[in-house]
Structure formats: structure tokens, C-alpha cells
Length: 84
Image 1 (spheres, rainbow, N blue to C red):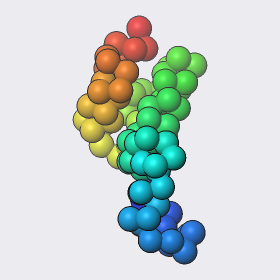
Image 2: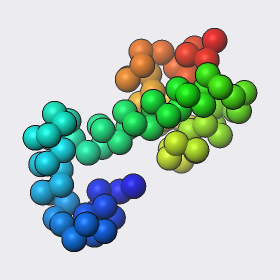
Image 3: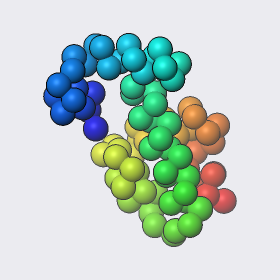
Image 4: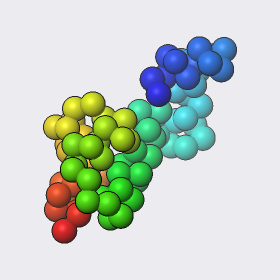
């Protein structure tokens, strides 16, 4: 979910929500969201044989290359390496 949409739903300012994330969780909203998406992707990669592109879409990434880059940055290996 985009930060602006989250802010609208909560009737709050997006900048304020971003500050809360940094203060309470030690990371920004997007970093938190990416971490959560990658954790969910790891589950799908372990438990299914779905194509990695389908896993990326299921967890909220529309671009496979961006998913792979973020996944590797967090996990230290590509989704295909992780699956093996």
C-alpha cells in the first residue's frame, strides 16, 4: 500500500506516518514494507513451485527486476538462489 493511501485511510499526514515508522521501528515505511513483502515471498518460494514472477506479483511487486534487486539486498541472494 502506498504511504499516501495509508495516510488518507488514517486521516493523517504521510510525513507524520513516515516519522512514526522511523521513530517506532527504526526504519522508514518503504523499508518496512519491502521487508514484509520479502518475508512473505520467502514463504511462497519455500512452499510453492510458482514462477518467481508470480511470487513477486503476489507480494506486491509489479516489476520482477525491482523485486529481485530488493530481495537480494535484504536476503543476500536472488530469489532463484534462495529457492534452491
